[in-house]
Image 1 (cartoon, helix red, strand yellow):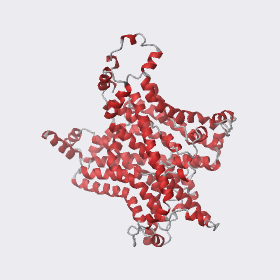
Image 2: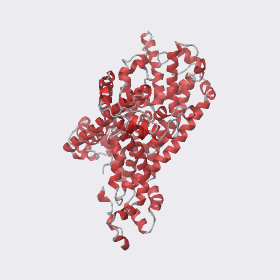
Image 3: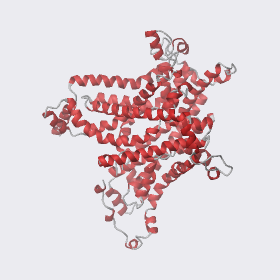
Image 4: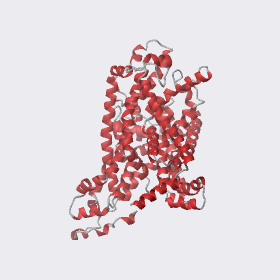
Length: 308
Length: 330
């Protein structure tokens, strides 16, 4: 044990920079790392700046007057905000469950050596990594064939299965679930479903955590399907709401020069600080949780690319 | 990998089963649970991959919706050969779209490779593990955010009146500053910077893991031979990273006709004056679909994108397989 520890220490010693270079690159990385978090902190500061200050001085790193006004004002806009938050939570929860279940079972089937049609089903799914059907044909199928225009399932079903997730799970089963355990359970007379539920799933929990996190992130962050398929306010997900507010402002700014009868429309747009408050609130769940889940993402990134 | 697993033949076969063993029905019956496991995925793939792929025939048709449903509309619409493609290739947009998409992606490919490997190598050489983890966590943050959110971050800097960049220009040089959302000149740099910045934490993970997996005795041996730090990186670290980088190159080369619609459409706030430097295949297709509703031509543009992408992956893979079979994807 002691010997091993010594070896690890010396391996750091051997691999690492000398003290000078180490200090230099530490400073370099620290600056870059701060640049990654700085804009978010800046947005938080803006959301706590008094509205009149924003008009007068612009965005400031340290405002003259702090204020909760933006968050209080959010209450008057909260009908839409809470509705969109609800939509996002719903699609994230339902979508993640479906994606994880479907990808995990598919991945299990194509990982099993005794599945006669394993190769066929592997190629059947993986071919989509080579060729993509394109935005317009997918749009036509979703809206014209499945009739999901302005339907919340248009935000869920296109993400209900993931070929990358299947790949991650397949690799996971191949490396983490010993064949002998499955075999012995089968000899004991356990049915395939029981084996999957009671033996394979518990062993594959880290893999399942990885793909469900990938999938949850995808649903939470999705604005494009909303932009493509959703028209009524009650079904707009949070991320698309952010896009829509921004583009409404731009449209109004352009038409403001031409007409003066847009008072009502302006009232529907939240103020500058309130918009930033919405950005903060929709980012916060990710910002607060991802450091704890980071290792699963990292694992997913390094596990997926194992060849057969 | 196959060698590590117990071969199936060790499983006892029921005597009665033995003599049915080779019939098709027996094989289907034996695999029934696996079929069940595959079923949802198969339905998904048919609905969201195979049917849309077939629906690409729209590119060769003068498509119109039909009362009889989508499939009927597809069948009844008249064939127009390559007219949609011709229309797309001859339009003024084609040149701009192709130039932007390929241009940005070539530079992205280069910069992403360079910075991901550069960051991975320096991170693998740091002495303090705890600091390293801190950097990694912070660097991953932008990767987890959508462009819908990031556009507001960008706006806090680039807002022509209130943004921090113009405040700085104003304080340092005086004058009015830059009207960012109406001035195309800085956008190629903004877009490249944002794309690389967002992805660095994520892109460097794989190379970092590779660099950390290198046998330390190799470094030790090179040190005894009197290699400098730079020589160690050049002769030990980089050769280990090259096979992984090759695999990633094959995977990414197919995306050279693709672009992130969030970065090119939402971040520049769909601004008209910027269209010459922000219009790519995807934004063009989206705009054609939603504003002019030109289904045939937008499908044709998308099909060009997919076919070229697939051809590039296959070509690149074939070349790699010839030169260095271990690095090939399939």
